[in-house]
Structures are given as C-alpha cells and as structure tokens.
Amino acid sequence: MRLAGFALAISRRRFRWLILAISGTAIGIQYVWQTLITPAFFPGSAPVDFIEDYVGSAQLMLSGIDPYSACHTRACWADLANTASVYPPVVTWLSLPLAHIDKTVSGGAALIAMQIFVVIFLFAVASALKVRDRQAIVALAIVTIAFPPLIGEIVKRNLEVLLLALSGIWFWGYVLGDRWWSGAALGIGLALKLVQAPLLFLGIWCRRWVTTVAALVSFAVLWAVGAPQYLPEFITRVLPGFNTGTGFAMDVAPVATLARLFHPGSMYGYGSGVDLTVRLLGYVIAAAVVLLTVITVGSPRSDRDGRALEAATVVAATPLVLAVVRPGHLLLLLLPIAVLLIAGVRNRDWIAVALVAASWALMGPVYLAASNVLAAGLGLPWTRVGEETAVAGALLLWAVSVRSLRAHPAPASHAVASPVVAFPG
Image (cartoon, rainbow, N blue to C red):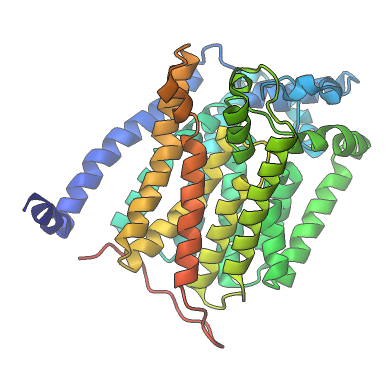
C-alpha cells in the first residue's frame, strides 16, 4: 500500500516539483559551498592540480627544467600523487601564460571556468537527448552536481572537468551524425589527455569520417605546436607508466582491484601489487570488455537514440580497460549515466534506472565514504571492500549500457526521430 501510494504521489507533477525543489536547494547550496566559497575563501592546505601540476610544470619549463624529470623512475607512479606532470607537453605549454599571473587570481578564474564547463556539459547533453521538460533538466543537473568525483575535480581545478565539457560537445555532434566540430572537441580532449582514445575508434568503427579526420587534425596540430621537444620523452618515459598499474587505493581500475586482492599491502603503497598473474588477469578483463562492447555496438545505428546508446556504451567501457584510473576520471561517466537515465525514463525501463542509480551511488557517495574512513586510518575489513565499490559501480554502469544497447533495435535504413524527453505523467 505504501509503495502504491508513493507511486501515485510521484505521478503528480506538483509533487515532483516539491521533491526537486527540496533536494535541489539542499544540493545546490552544498555544491556552491564546496566548489566556490570554500576553495576561494578557505582553500586549506590540500594540493590543487591547477597550481601544483599545470602552473607548476609551466614554471619548471620556463626555468629550463625538464617537467618530466621526476618520471624517469617508478617514483612518479608510486602513489598517484602530484609528484610530477603526467600530461602531454601541450598542457604545460598552454599553461605558460598562467605562470606569470598571481595564483589567487588565476585560481579564482579557474574556479569560474570549472562552473562554465559543467554548464556546457549539461547544455550539450540536454540538447543532444532533446531534454525539454524543465523537471527532467533540473533532475539531470542535480544528478550531475551531486556526483562526488565532479566536486573533487572542480575543487582541484583539474582538466578532467574541461574534458567533461568537451565530451558533451563531442556527444552532441555524434548523435546528430557526422560533425566536424564534434571531432574537433574530441581531438582537443585527446591532445590534453589520452583517456578518451576509445572514442576515436568508435568514430572509425561507425564510419564517422568527418568527425574522425577533424579529431586527428586538431590532435596533431596541438601536439605539434605545444612544446614538441618534450614529446619523445613523454612517449617513451611517461606514457608507458599508464600501462603499469598499481594497487594503491587511489587507483580504481579493475587491475588495481586485482592487485589489492592478491597483494593487500599494495593498497597502502607497499609495492605496486601488479605481478605477472595480476597483469594477465587484467588483460583478460580488458579484452573481454572490448570484445563484448564491439559485439554489442555491431552494426552502427542510424537513429539518434541508437547513436546515443553507442556513445554511452563506449564511454562506460573506457575506465575498465585502463590500468590507472584515478577517482576523478569517473566524472566522465556522467555522460553514460545521463544517457541511460534519460533512455530508462523514456522507455519506462525502471530496472535500468534503478541500476544506473545504484552505480552512481557506488562510484560516488559510497566510495567517498569508504575512502574517508580509510584516510582516517581505519583499515577495517569493510573499508577495504568499500574501496572496490567504485570499480563495481563502473562495471554495473557498463553492463547496463550493454543491456540497453542490445535491447535497442537498429533501424533498417532510415533514422527515427527521438521523442522529446519528459517525466511521465
């Protein structure tokens, strides 16, 4: 009876507005406090990637010091800390003008830029999925700004938030068909960080040639003009480190879970934990994810909804095939989360909606709580299990994306218009 009563209440638009108003106000206030007021006026002593990494590496380059010198040994990867820049040299090159600006001023401007990137992402995704209903837009915004990985990366002013915005632009163009500006956004993102490389292969597989060429051109131009003298060192000394993996707690890749399972001490930095057995098992998992994803994508979809699910599936698979995945990288999964939630509501697939909500919680609040307990020095058994909830959430999200794409029929010869998304009732 209670469940039926709640279902009846939630079907009423005014009641939904009440829920959104209460939750949105509370989450909005917390978001503004955590991502604007606190970092601007009460910064604390925690390292900020924008200052320590981007501006710091630019200052090293201006001083004639090799920004990758610390990555000549395994120390660069020991605990995934900010010991050195592991970004392509173009990131340091683009940060050179910032080295002459007061850190308070540049840091404040970066905070504002982070908020703009979030707005761009929400606008691009809502436009791509034809989300017109105001309640759906508000709900999408709440899901996004309440996601702990996003909040953490905004506070650190990490490039990952810019990549989120660029992924939204790429996604918008991808669902429309084959757009050069979609490829340009992807190419810029790849030039800054290579984690989105699978999206380039999606364009090739689905024969989006304009998108693919634009991505390759923008990528090549940025790498050619952005301190190219450091490219050989980056490719030979830094890039291979991304494939080594580590069992340290800040790595939420499947390989890291295996390393912590076979070598528990690696969770606290006692060795990498990645031996031959762990590496081989990691390759098996990555191969299985890639194979199942390719089989599921199969023949490219020609309709808008199908392309959206294709993109969501590939994005969801990305962190499962990498050896080093920082918690902040999970914010890029907001794209498949949004796609699958909207598709679930549209198709009345409440099982998919519930599973996506569970994956959101596992990668966000649950993982954050377990990490905070571990950081407090409480290495309890359940805490160790809690460290793997992020991986579990990523796996669940990918499984739901595969399920949704497999259930979506591929139109025979013509595109089918997507309905405007609105909440039922």
